[in-house]
Structures are given as structure tokens and as C-alpha cells.
Length: 466
Image 1 (cartoon, helix red, strand yellow):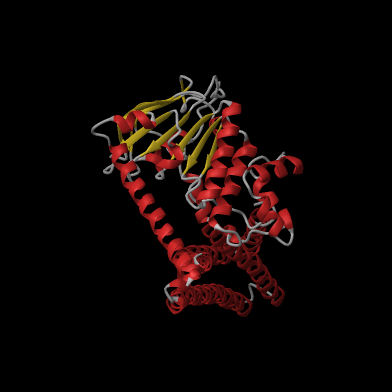
Image 2 (cartoon, rainbow, N blue to C red):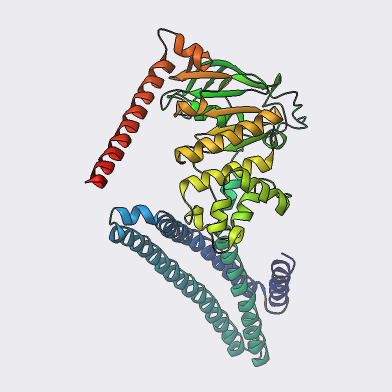
């Protein structure tokens, strides 16, 4: 506005004033009509071109998305021999981008041609009028030259005005995704002046909680239970019963649609969101890692942790053997999404992050599912010791019931409802118990695996003697 629009407007006004004052209203009328036609044509053509630019942006985003998905999920591409399919998909997206870009360039050429045609027509008309004046004796040759120069003087600001408008519209269109994001209402946020969470032990209480990711498919249905402060509580049940949803609701990734969740008597929707999440530590089922060193991935749990604190945690979570075997020790890059280390090592690293965060409330979502039996038992022993000494509230979500048999309380969910509660032995003593049924199934499978291993050992011994 300051450097372009206002000076151009002033310049056009002065030119029109001089033409009107010296040569009459007819010259000024042609000038104004030229400006009007030029502006209308530019605005309408630019609006027409907007669709092509939007298509090009969408095609570009699609191509980038396909490329990113193909590279991140390269293992799936290789497993199913679909390199050709992904290449074809990427090529199709690039073709769409190419076609849209050609339309953008073609429409720009049409816009420039139309602008030149309008201006050239106006210049020809004014020169004709000036020549008639010279022939009639009312204008001199100097007047003809002056009119010619004044009209040419208008061409620069008009062209510049057209390009400024075109670039402005194009830039706004390119930022359309950002503007759309700004319009999205963030549902999960702190209330104005929300107080911090006053932790007095860490009791978690679900009161008639109802929630579903889709309105037509509720996950939790009028669910009520209490996780006592400072105790180890396990949440078990069949797949789809809502176990992991409990974690997401307490951490406020989502808000309940009915009922409420209390921590030490405070509704988690009424306290500061950032402060709430600082009090909760999580070991997720799928551990996300950065393409950085083991040291920095561990320190992500507490950015202020010293190297000595990180080393102590490495020993606690049994990562010291891995660090010794790595060529660069804790400075070893784990690769994108941790591809350079095993699933069990990822889980141990995630538990290390949790210990560094030192949160008073902790959630373990199948935190040892990728570990071998010996490492799992050693790590569980370490976790029990750490949490027993600190008196923290520990919530474990598990399918493998052996890992949570020592829990102070076990909550069994089925179809989003609390089916039964109690200790391991209390639930086993019941005649009708889903937990007992699940336990017996898993124990029989474990027994079959142990017998199979013993048979293999005996066969190997016999073969060795032979």
C-alpha cells in the first residue's frame, strides 16, 4: 500500500488531471475507461486462474505425501514387492502437478496478452484523437508527443499494479492451507486462567465416563472405577475393550463426551493442560524415536538431565549392553523411527525416558511386549523397585497377564464397561471370571511352549549322545 498502491494511484490521478485540463474530458475519459477495463480484466482473469493454482498446490502436496509415505513405509513396500505401484502412484501425482502447472503458465500468458491488448487499443485511440486535433489545428505536434508520453507513463504503473494484484492473490492462495489451519477450533485446551493440578497422591477416578472416537461407536460406556494413589493398578481385557482409550483420556488427547475424570478430586478439564501432562509419564505401545543419538533420545524425557543421570537410567533399563556394543556408544544414531535398534531396545529406551521425566503418575501401555522373557523379568523387577521406593501411581495396560499378576488392583474391561475388579488371586477364586478365563488360556499356551522347548532339548541331547 505504501510503496506501490498509493504512489500509483497518485500518478494516475495526476495524468488524468493534466489530460483533462489541457486537452478536454475526452482524453481523460479514454484513460479512465482503459484503467477500468484493465482492472476488471485483471481481477476476473486472476480469479479464473485461481482454480488452476489451487489444483497445482493440491497436486504438489499429494506428490510430496506419496513420496514421504513411500520412504517412511519402505519396509511394507519391499515386503509386498510394490515398488512399481508406488512409483506409478508418485508419477501420477507428478503428472497432475505438471498439467496444473501448464494451465497456470498458459493462463498467465493469456492474462498478459489481454492486458497488452487493452493498453495498445487505448494508446491507438488516443493517438488517433491527438492526430485529428493536430490536423484540425487545435493541437500542436508537441501536444501529440506529450499525450503519447503521458499514456506510456501510465503503462508502467498499470502493469505493476496488475502484477502486484496477481502476486498477492497467488501468495494468499499458496498460504490457504495455513489460513485453514488457523480457522480450525482447537477443542482440547486449557480454560482461561485454569489453575495448576494440585497433586495430593495421584488418585484417578472415572465417574460414569462415556466416550467414542465416532459418535455411532462408543468405546467406553458409563464406565466408573478408581485407581488408588500410590498403587500399581492394571487394566486388562480383550482387544477393543477401551484399555488404551483410558490412557488417552487421562492425558487429555481427547475429552469425555459424558461423565468426568478426576485426579485427587479435580476434574482434569478444569486444570491447566500443560501442567496436567507434566504430572503424567507414558510408555506407549509403539515407541516413537527421533533420528538422533541414543543419548538425546533418552534425554528427551527430561531436557535438563545431566549425562550422569542419563547413564544411571541406561543401567536401570538394561541398555548398557547395547551401548557397549555400539561403535559410538551413547552417541550412536538410532536412525529414522529407531530403525537401527530392535523393538525391545526401543521399549527399554522409552522406559528410560519415563524414569528421567520422573512423573508422579505413570502409564505403561504394553511396555514390555517386545522384550524377551529374561530381559522382561529383569526390567519389571527394576520398575517395581523404582516405583515402590517413590510411592507413585502406576497404571499398566497389558495383554500378558503374567506381567501384572502382582498388581494391587486389576480392572477388567469388556465392551467399554468394567466387568470385574480385584487382586490377581481374588479374580482367580471367582467361579465366573473373564480374568480367570484369560489367565487359563495364556497359562496353557505358556505350558505348551515350555514343553515344546523341553522336547527340543531332549532331542538335541539324544542326537548328541548318538
